[in-house]
Amino acid sequence: LGLPEIRFIPISALNGDNIVHESAHTPWYQGGSLLQVLESLPAGEGVSEAPQDFHFPVQLVQRADGSKQDDFRGYQGRIEAGSVRVGDKIRVEPAGLESSVRGIIGLKGSVDQATAGEPATLLLANDIDISRGDTILSAASPLEPQRRLIATLCW
Image (tube, rainbow, N blue to C red):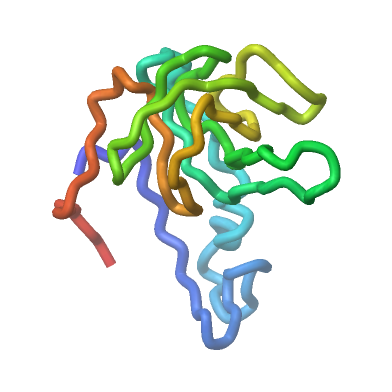
């Protein structure tokens, strides 16, 4: 399969064996519970910071509360790859709509740039229909929505 490392974990979801804690029902297994193994895996390896690889799944659309800025609409999520700057051209998939980034709000307020792994709220130059589950990409991104999936699954 070309996988760098394969780990086998005997589990029982019905009885909770080796899910959170190591199970007494598998004394022959010494590899740790599923949760322990997942928490020990490296995070962020292979994540690109190249602007053309910008990939931002929308997790929440934040609208104005009616008090200060009635035109506020921010798209919240975590940047999964690449980076984005104020003024960058973006594309929203699966609709293929285009806009540019008017503002970025990070954990400490407004910022000019955000990179992979950071949570952010993106403000766009024009009002387009984006909802949870859509993906914001760099306008130059070669990624396109697909209707087919090819996978190898080992169960």
